[in-house]
Length: 473
Ligand code: V47
Image 1 (tube, rainbow, N blue to C red):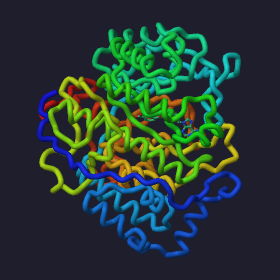
Image 2: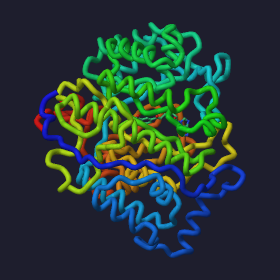
Image 3: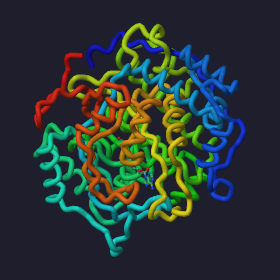
Image 4: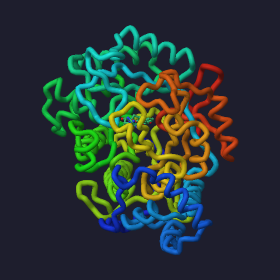
């Protein structure tokens, strides 16, 4: 990599403490929680700065100090949501100014047939069930060519844990796409799919080496990065209640650690608003943050940047990207090399995913709405101080709400998408597409400057359907 020295980042002592008051969001006591919170909020007539308990957090954010687990709990509990949101906006503007990213992409779900039956998921089908599908290589080829035709820079490919497709199907898919569309970035396979591939290709159950070897083969065939899906909530209780059978949090983190170790960047999600409690949300964020500390320490190490963090140890030091400008002697963000290839990868983007109950086995739950979704975007921006980007995935939030989220911590609105089968908000079908014009309009109206990116956050210069990467910066 070039041009990376001088990216000295603020290294502060981290103190991760567990604890704090618990506040259950489980079905039995929470049915109307979003409404209840909104009502309390309005009754209290809360205005920015009104909750005095937030004062120490405001001071920490202003000086670029890392927030603790107890801070995370308070940010999720307080009725003073506007202060939480405006703090996140402050951090977002410090990190990214007015720039807001979008991309031209296309999602492909190669199959919805899945060996698992997660209760929150409305996407999975069993082999003979109505609506089950599995795309042939020819189907995928056609979709990839259509994406090129439409000027896309990225394919986002995920599917269920298909019981009988062989490993070759996945590597053939990668190499076929690379052959017909060499400029398309392939972001594909959630962590649980990678573990499934390690199993079917007999590389061991959940073993790190097996995962590493599968990722190497996929990278060799054309895989460019991993999406953030399937993280759900890193907690065994929540796992057993809502997605038993799926990999647990430690294995999800191992898959992303392995991807980072071979130079692939990845994204991270949290699926919130179902059976989890707020302390479990906080723990999820802290686990992501710790893993990113180690990835960034290795990245700094491989670029000759000295930090006091030893990548081989669970050290207490951390790299924080969210502080005020004067904390940074060079650019604050890790930078992808011009050819998009690095020795060490990291989490690029956080994608908060609100639980959408429709057609799932958890349909009796209300799912989070407006204010809670704004709060989650903001809290994730504040707590995940070492992950550069934050996406408001408009498909799950609607474009209207995503626009608000840009003012509450998000600096990315995702892409044109085209096809999406995993969730459908407000009766949407699988054709869920928006135009670049609408994405840009949403960004501008929110007060920001739209900029097109590729998957690795390199600026794109576009002329109609043709595009190149701007490597001047
Ligand atoms: O893996 C499944 C989640 C994920 C539901 O990395 C649900 O750039 C809400 O990960 N309600 C897929 N969420 C989406 C995803 C994603 C989307 C956009 C960008 C990126 C990225 C990643 O959606 C699944 C699962 O975690 N999910 N069912 C549901 N009912």
